[in-house]
Length: 128
Image (cartoon, rainbow, N blue to C red; front, top):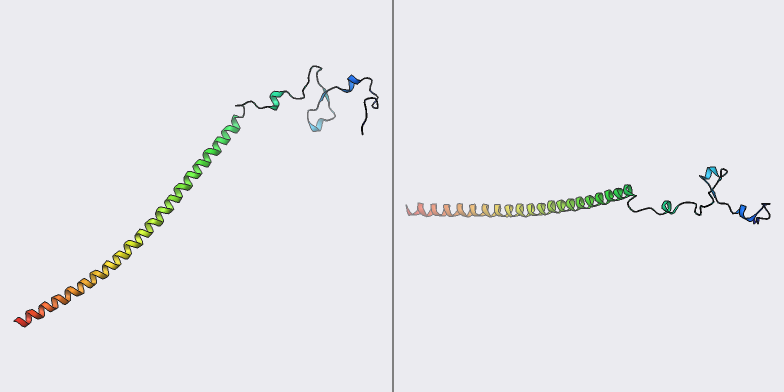
């Protein structure tokens, strides 16, 4: 596995240290010799993205942040509406209980009024 430059039968040390570029994994057999002055396989500009070049990703993340904010606000509004519906139902139950109690009181007052009218009629008939 470990072959030195002398084992491969090459003529000199400088020929073994040539830099080759491979276009893709499928083209491993098509090695292109890099220019003599080239020191890097890829320029630094390709490795480090410049700020502002990913505007598509930035707008996409901004869209998702906006969507998340809208969803949170709508969830809060729906929760508030459900709370109001429950409170309104409780108030309606209280009002209906009060009306039922007042209806009983009104019926009792009508009975008392009828008894008073009957007693007054009896007293009036006794005086005549």
